Image 1 (cartoon, rainbow, N blue to C red):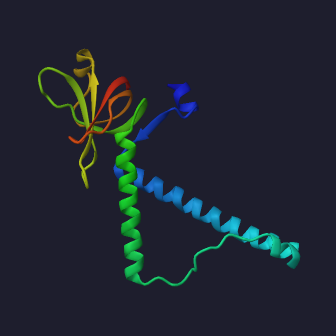
Image 2: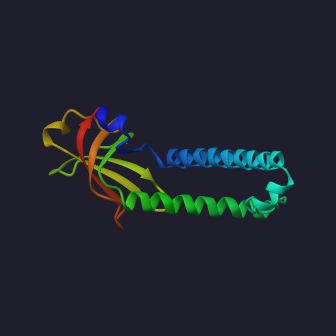
Image 3: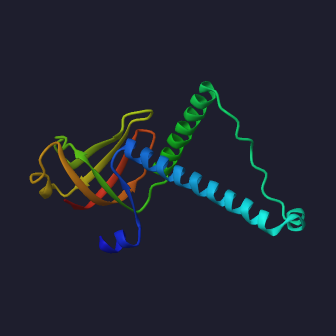
Amino acid sequence: MYYVIENNRAAYYTARDSWMGTRRIVASILKTEKSLIESQLSELLERLGTSARRSIRPPVLPAKGEQTEEEKGEAERRERKQAEDSLQQELRNLRGLVFLDSVFATPDDGNDAMLVAEFSPEPQCVVFRVSLPKSARSEIPDKARLRVFGDVTRPLASDGYVDIRAIAVY
């Protein structure tokens, strides 16, 4: 597990809202860095003088006019939709090792030892199903906050389940 963590070789999921929040933070950082680069480029062009400005063309940036509340709301809806699509795509293509940090239920279906955690109730319900050895089932209480390290056996399908084979539960 240490190798996987140190080399960033596994996906990490807690809840949909957490995933969305992380995405917003990264987008904000990228936006800030873009603004910084743009200002540094303008400053550099000023220092180079008029002859260099004619030969070096700065990128054409869209005008930064004031947005109406309606336009801001529409932009937020588009960003939210884009983030949802990105999350669904990520889960549909999920392969390899994952860490899950969530509250898991232990459904009593008789045959299989399994942990179940709801990741996202909407817009499409996404549930992580973790298969365990039957011997481990008796040691795990129902509705317990656990961390699972496992291997994805089936990425997100139309039924809303992502199946994982547990390697470690703690």
